[in-house]
Length: 124
Image (tube, rainbow, N blue to C red; front, side, top):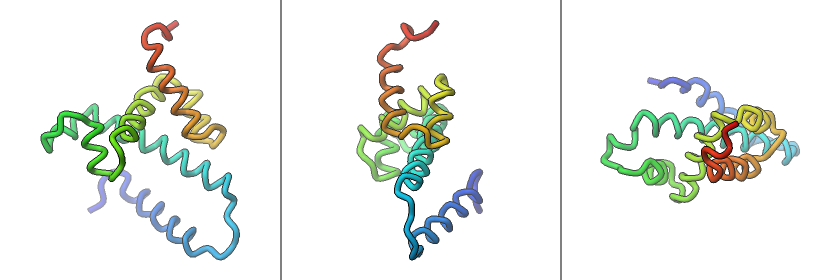
C-alpha cells in the first residue's frame, strides 16, 4: 500500500530510472535545479515529521538523529534540512525561488540559517 505521496514517489522513481538509462545528454543545470527542488521538498517533509513527533516513536530524542539513521545521512545534514524546512515556511519567496530552480538548495540553506540566527530580530 502506498502512503500519501506514494504515487508521486513511484512516478519520480520511474523518472529516475529513465534518466539513468538515457543515452542523450542531460542538462546538468536543469538536473541540479530538480535535485535542489527535491531537497526543499525533503526539508518540508522531515520538518512535518518532526512536528508530528515521528522521531519519538522509535525512542529517538532528536529528530536530526532519527532522520540521520532513517535516511543514511549525517546528523549535520539532517539538522540542515530541518532548519530549511522550518525557515522556508516563513520565507515564501525563497521557497518559490528554490522550487522553480531560480536559486540552489545551498543558497536557500544559507538564507534559512541566517534567518534562524536572526531569530525574532528578523520579524517586522
